[in-house]
Length: 479
Image 1: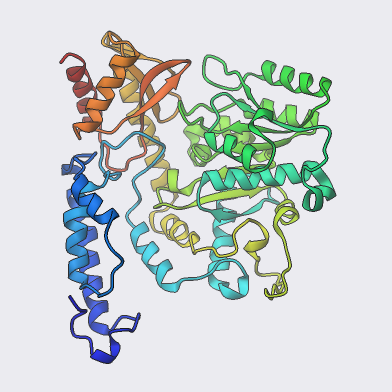
Image 2: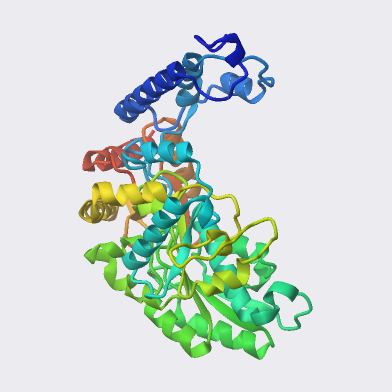
């Protein structure tokens, strides 16, 4: 079907005509409004139509155009029914929130402007917005006044960039030219056994090797043990290795625990080690008085990863890397190819000098708009409401003989299991819960035992959803 109302000489034009703009705007607005109004009534996890998705997967290369109406009809009939509905109030498996209301519109504006946020001359206004957003994020977590950084795709990219800076700081002037080649004393880094898997990936990508990533045991609250950290660093030094960095977690991925940041910071200062804090999960909760205490030591970090697409509830993707001294990023990433005119200007930053990407989208806009439209009070209230929901589920799991609470509820994650069932039985209940479409919880390995995990980061979740989930799990465990 050809594009309607288009003259023959315009059929090969990739630009929209006025009628196409009007149609696309109408259909997009109708889709967004209709989807968000009905998402709570859909099954969280779809009954996958494999025939339809195989047809999508195997579709031939298109030779003729279709109408906008046909594209949106396919969206409604195939894509949406086979999507996992992350905006559903009972979608609670990962540290993955539902996006706030303004994000879809900010995404559309950013795509329309299509700024390349690498060189400031290509994106002056976007450059100013990103500088503002980075400064605000640094203020949220109490980072050093000298801190700088850039917006990334997420916490994994931010962790990789932060650890690149740590590695190159340890290598000194030889970092760019020699890297790790020829070193007789391997670099070693340290993180808790609860650390996010992106740190393992970073160790591999940076040439350090996961063999030189020490996983430090945790205490009964799943925080890194300082005695074990001290012993591990001392042992590596005795063995001729070169400790260079400790990765502390501000929100471990399974239980949401916060490592003892103040003690780790003192230790790193004493041992002259780089302190990287993986704050992608929980560091932004520092805006709340309820959670600020354990996070105050973030100000001592040499680098911090953050995820605005978590507790600022923007749509994917939006991460951030902050470093105490932005020149450490330039040490790792700044290059001066002849085909790029990198003019310096006191008002702007060439963000391509601070990270691995050259082509970069305008991710900062949705963060900027979100914070200004909703305001800080709304974010504080929302973060605390997520914690309240977790505490509610934790009370049910901890007070009922039918459940076993397997980790303290310190933040917004709850790990529990059905008491009467073994690991396989709990796995079966979780699988049936998800496949039934009532709720989507995730699995957790807690000290070697299988558990179910709910992480409250969904703007639509209500206390009644918590009650429904626990009742359904109990019903499934008895049938």
